[in-house]
Length: 88
Image 1 (cartoon, rainbow, N blue to C red):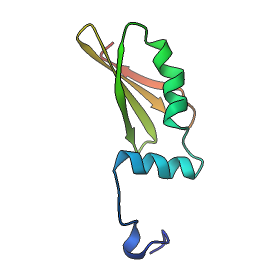
Image 2: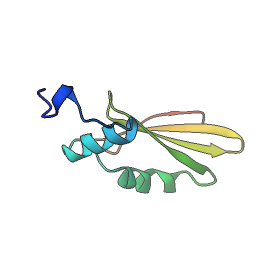
Image 3: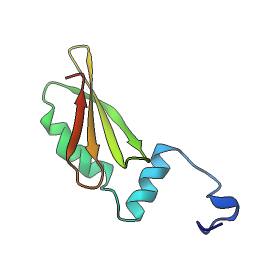
């Protein structure tokens, strides 16, 4: 297919991780490590639970826990800017 793989895609896909890798390889998205390095220090008192990657938007969603409350921080994968928060 047009992607250069037979049958239109690579044989193995690991969802978010693969999509983030592919976007990063194309120079469109900053690395998760860079995003985490910018955002995690801004969340004092919160436990960092981990990331999600939205391949449709190119955004990372970092998940934190503070005082029993889950907080999501949405970050533009291209610019590294926070574009949304929920939970506080």
